[in-house]
Length: 220
Image (cartoon, rainbow, N blue to C red; front, side, top):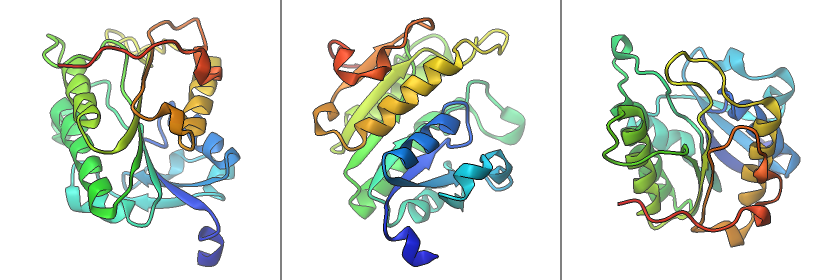
């Protein structure tokens, strides 16, 4: 089985069991990649059976640097999707840990193993210093990526959930189109150093990256 894994380019994927990850993983497989899903212990059940048969699963914690470092070893690219839309202080996972520190750990691991390609999914409206701690920490995590020396691409889609009531804000069609653009961008050099944003929940501009105009201004 190990030899079969070696026939593919492995992509380290965080947040693979989340709302977007469920679409990104099949899309990566369709583009000829082997997803290595980095999941919290006990979350393996969230992986669809057809994806589970065609990926590698590595349990770990994004908030633990050594765990991320071990999980990313041997992969050729990173797709960092993991996020938390609601703080979970009882579990000891505030936004600061889930977004900023986790992203710092991902960047550290990329540097340690010489992984150049990094796709980071932020969120429309993310901005360091925002009064809302969710948008503040998401913005600071994005700033870490954009300030790194990796070959990064950033996507800033509409939030998955309404932050007030937790109801879904985006459709399956939106997520499918975004997932396809993410998987495609892994192997596209023309998306390196670019930021693609769409705050709308009723348009699907991700189908063709070339249709997304402009680069959002630098985050300060």
